[in-house]
Length: 159
Image 1 (tube, rainbow, N blue to C red):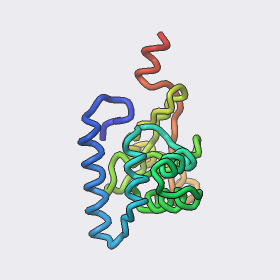
Image 2 (image 1 turned 120 degrees about the vertical axis):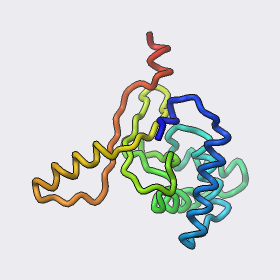
Image 3 (image 1 turned 90 degrees about the vertical axis):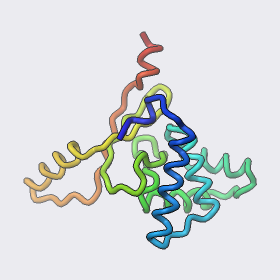
């Protein structure tokens, strides 16, 4: 899995592939990808940055799709619960999943300057954490690993 939040890529293909995967997963699992849920996912996919629920709500409001916070929160809850988006704890915000349909425990690299977020496969980090927890008799149920720093673009402009 590439860190697409930081690397140049075919963004239209990225969005189309993710939407297709989510639609197929919903069909297989009998989940309802309503028009609002789909649009919220599209909004998150259109940016590789963390977005707060109210940022998403502002876009929905401008499009006439709803103006009340529960509209955005319900859609985001659905996307997160089904692995189509992730909540970035540090920022109290959300990003589209870089690998929807694949069970994983990602790590997030968050640019403190531009808020770009890259999702990396967190297999090694989460396995090390689970192993250390297991040695203490602790059973990990959920892992959220977030690192803050500067993305390549911001490092380049800072120099």
